[in-house]
Image (cartoon, rainbow, N blue to C red; front, side, top):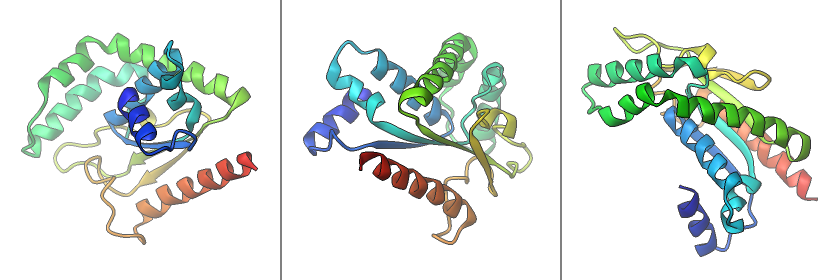
Length: 191
């Protein structure tokens, strides 16, 4: 992901632009890992992703470290219930290699504190308010929150929390309000 994003920024001559990530579910963990790889890269051009990041909106991302194995089981059950194909390799990795995910979450906590001192990153967490029928919540509110950062509910289940009916949808308005605030803050920093 890091190399692809750097390449895309080079192709479009946008290396100097700030980055805001909007990630749903496990995509949030992918973003955290990508930032870790970017920061730790020996190659300067790959470090631009971490350096350029000014905001992350997490939608239904499981941050609670001890909850990865139950989360994997929940996702598998929910997808099966909805008739979706389940990538069992990913779910098994979540169960088996949860230490890797715990390490990423640990790194992400340290990274947030380091960046708070030098170049703060705006972070907002969104959690699902509704349960999947006959199943329940995929990511509980407590797992979706990060202490010290804003969090808001979206009146939808895990699978629908990124599917807004339009610009008047309360979920859309909540997410877009945060993104606009971040863009304003980033613009003010550049002046």
